[in-house]
Length: 329
Image (tube, rainbow, N blue to C red; front, side):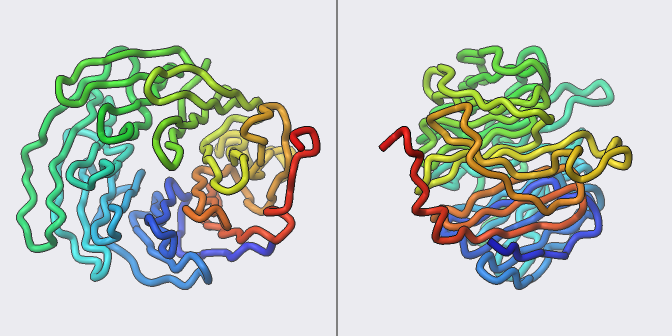
């Protein structure tokens, strides 16, 4: 499985995202650049320039016409995917740490940072999918998360609610219309670094600095699975086709110079989704912590973005699809 190395950033990656078909891969980093690549061969299609701070987050709508980014320059920007034109800029009081389109593309959420006396918020934005339309500055609603600040958020299925992952390790479900917390569970012992939905949004996976990843049911927040590793995690993703989850992390970037690549544990780890404690493989390559992982929607490849500024695209070999865990057959 030879990776394709995407060299388009000069600083560490913060998030990567495939579009719905998986032919495009979007990457954002602390160098203020948004890149779009062909996922099958790693050719760079173009960049989206306009942010003046580190970019923390990116999402693309289901028709691959609109791109949304959130940055440390206290803005979220909406871009036309095809031309790279910035269609709208929303301004906030603090940095935007996570953005996500709703399932029908009519809305988006933006998680803002709690800082300088301002509370952390989840802002619900109205999105018009017509490229010529004037976007509204007025949010539909602003949710103020209870207790610890939100680090990541996703829409539940049919936009019924929003799932949030918090700094204190808790996972909560919010009614975005009323702004109320529906339920909350203490999931991890340290901050949640990533939260990704399954394909149908009925369950989701969280990654945490407490060295574990967990799967929860979206509707009830019932705990389903737990995967323990030996390094802090920054990202976790669920694979279609095979029943695996991919976890990535490694010790903190500021301590990287004190260890070798092997000790730093900078590999993507594959765990069996059902048999929680079964690690089925690792993929090496990054020279620093892995910050973000995304799986191609068809399940035939995955990508990882690291502190080293590289995105590595891995297309699975035939053996991967033939793999069956003996005890299950």
